[in-house]
Length: 242
Image 1 (cartoon, rainbow, N blue to C red):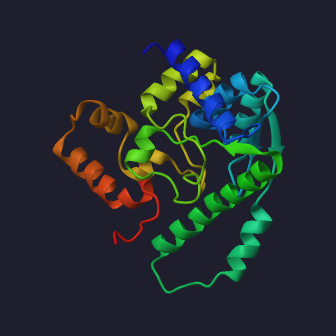
Image 2: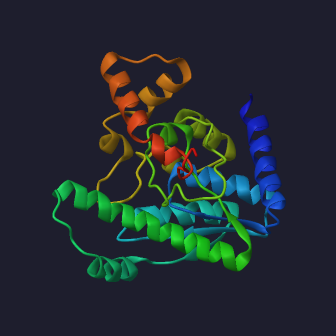
Image 3: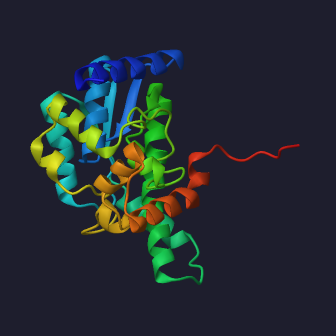
């Protein structure tokens, strides 16, 4: 499918899902990354007066906010800034520290940031009667690179069938600033964090595997292990089969 045709179909799909849910518009986290930028522009196309991008820094890189505002300014997207630093600090003080590895603690606290963002988006969605739009793509969903009930806690996922390289193609078509398209993908969870370093895999490798089934033995093992380990993240809560 041509990129232009796909953009039209995705925008129409977003509109239909919002209308079917008896909602008025869309709200999403505007992170400064390529995926949220694409989601923002697609939503703006169909809900020009009821699309809200929310900037949710939590001890985040100031460059992320700069890039988020760059997208908002270029496409005239309404924004709201909610700084989560104090909330994160307060909740961190209340929550118990279990005896575990530093790595587990680091991951747990990073996930807390993402879940605070989800809570904030749903607060606004409830107030405005909007749907929460996620920005995860197929590559991230396949290997579980999202936080359960964090950035995975959304109403619709327009990019869920698009691998990362196809999202880049869409971003170029939509006119997303090149600076955003070309920067290393990052969830912005800690200084210097990048998706590919954390995954131990490149998006090119993941995309190739998902689209063609081709990969080196090492890459295949890594991807399939991640897919198996995160299967529960892609499923609704389990119910007894009796």
